[in-house]
Image 1 (cartoon, rainbow, N blue to C red):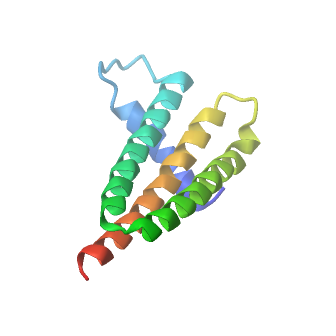
Image 2 (spheres, rainbow, N blue to C red):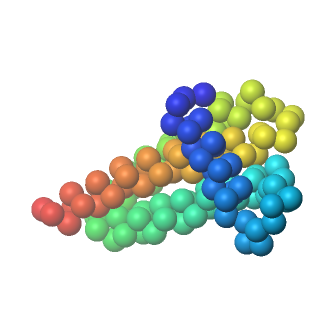
Image 3 (tube, one colour):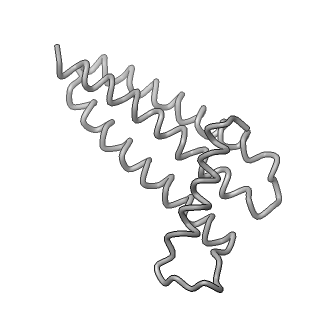
Length: 125
């Protein structure tokens, strides 16, 4: 597991522990709570990416949109394979979902940066 993903998983655990809606000193978050929080983070990143993709599509001609769609389809397959690779050591365990979702969020955040760069380039020409 790379250092960035390890840091992300640790940060999510700390965030969840420190951000309970009803703080109770004797109740730590469960693995299920952490898994749900990680999945929500992945969903939020995906929503941001979808918005950027929509904005980018609006700036492209038909050829550019077709190339973006092909790139995005390949990237989605890569993101899934990457998450499965990181989560594989936890296969069958309760942390699998946390690691899988954290990887999805991390990879999606990097894609967001790439899409923003591309969109900014189109706006500045």
